Each structure stands twice: as C-alpha cells, then as structure tokens.
Image (cartoon, rainbow, N blue to C red; front, side, top):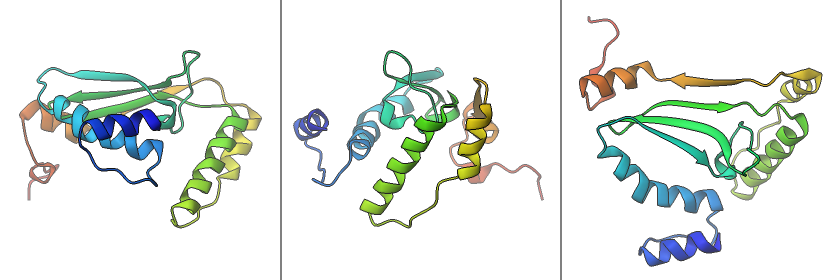
Length: 154
C-alpha cells in the first residue's frame, strides 16, 4: 500500500487514508491503464493480475492471479481464470471479504457453505472464460453505446 500511495501522490491523485490496496490499485488502473487501453485498435490480453484481484482464481507459483482479460477498442470483451478449487483457501478469501465488507459498513452476506462443501468433495482443475457477445459486436462494428444494440428490432 505504501508504494501505491507514493505513486498516487507523485501523480497528483487524491486518495483516502482508509483506502484499501484494491482501492489504490483501481485508482491507478482507471487513471492510467484504461485510458491507454481505450486508445488501442488491436486486441489486448492483460494477464498477471495482482493477488488482490484474483477473485475466484488460483494464484500461480510466481505470485500472480491466473486470470486474463481481453480488451478490444476500449471494451472488456472477455474475462477468464483458472478456478480456485482449494476449499481452505476459498474459505479464507471469503472470510476476508466478509470482514472487509463489515469494516466498510456494507451489508453482511453469508459464505456459500454448499460451494465450500462441494470443493471439499473434490473439484478437478478447471478454467473458463466469459465472452460478452454484445461487447464483441460493439467493438467489431465500432458502436459506442450498448443501448444502440438490439437483439430483435421492433
């Protein structure tokens, strides 16, 4: 966090003492990475996300989240990752998320115990990627607003 705060200060960007590592990272992402992505015409794959951005993905031996995002013409087209199938790590992450929500004064949710029990029963290694077809069409046709896409004309 200290390094992210230093970078934000050097760039003249505001942050709060209560900001989490993820808050600081997102601020830098929104201010510097996304504007660069928007200017690119070619598809871009972003990999090696910080562990705090892992969500439900595994962390590699090198310490990065095994996750990928595909951007094209400024739009996130797809998001995929290797599923975290370790029930103990999944439980730790879920509990840390609940504690963060409580600290931030957000509504408390409950852990998905059935999901954790299913992981203990055994989930083989797997991965997946979700593709936003409407976003892919928007990028291909250079449509700027998703409201301009209609699946069925009427």
